[in-house]
Every structure is written in C-alpha cells, then in structure tokens.
Length: 129
Image (cartoon, rainbow, N blue to C red):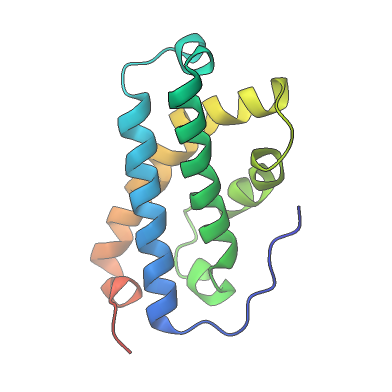
C-alpha cells in the first residue's frame, strides 16, 4: 500500500496527526502491557484493537508532511512506512510478526521520541496557526 499523497498540510493538521499517533501508541502500550506474543495473538479482542490502533498510527504517520518528519529524524518513519501495507494486509504470519514488533519495539520508541520532540519542537504539537 503506497502512502497517501496528502495535499499541503497546515500546522494544525500536522499537530492533530501527531496527537492521534500519540493516542494510538498509548492505547497499544496499554493493551499489550504484560502480554506475551502468544497471548496477544490468541486474544481476538485485544489483537483486533491493537491492529486498529496500529493502523491508525501508521496511517497518521503516512500523512505527516516530509518537512515535519525531517524535523524528527530519530523517529523510524521508514519503518512505519514499511509496516503499513502489512498492517492493512491479510491475516497470517507476516501480520502476526508486524503486530508484535510494532507493539513491543516501534511504538515504545516512537512514544519516547514524540515526548522528546514535544520539548525540543513544541510548535509541531501546537494546535494553532
């Protein structure tokens, strides 16, 4: 799945996308806290919600303008872009692996960097023009 080709995005829209990413990431961390990979993959309800939140996060990341991404270079944007098609793909082992890797590695790292950037680049997170 190719990333969407967004029109020019306003600072307000970019801030909203970053906020959605943070909310989705926090939901994933909360839902998966204390779960093993097998427990996550067996739990139909938790797995479904984790997948929904990961899609929301990856889709929001794909809509972020290149200049906003460039101001946050430590965030793994290529990783999210790479995982996005699998998150929207068919069930199976590739999706299972992506769910676990994203939930236990990419999401916590992204949340950490978003906190850092909220301090170093607060203007990116401000909901004003």
